[in-house]
Length: 111
Image: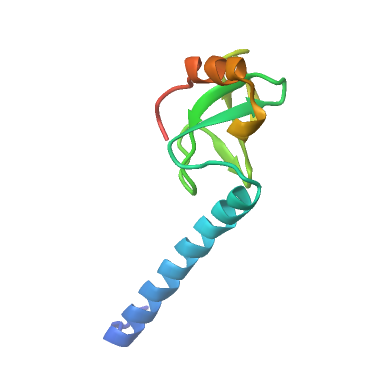
């Protein structure tokens, strides 16, 4: 079966659809995080299910070292050396000692 050639209009429509899907994908993660008062993009303090605090790179819609699950990510906790779901933590909810401990412990530096 021979593939038909796309017209310029069809190509534009396909590119617009693709861009809209990317924007929708980003917004489904960014909007809930912002509404709940979490930071995102760059270094973010997260908490694993065992309560360990550490700093990770959290970029919406990008994940190489973890499995994205909406507002959570499944990744390795460098504090307890285990795999766990992690969630962002509001900096305002942490004590100075918690913030210092979290920024002192970082996971691997890949997004």
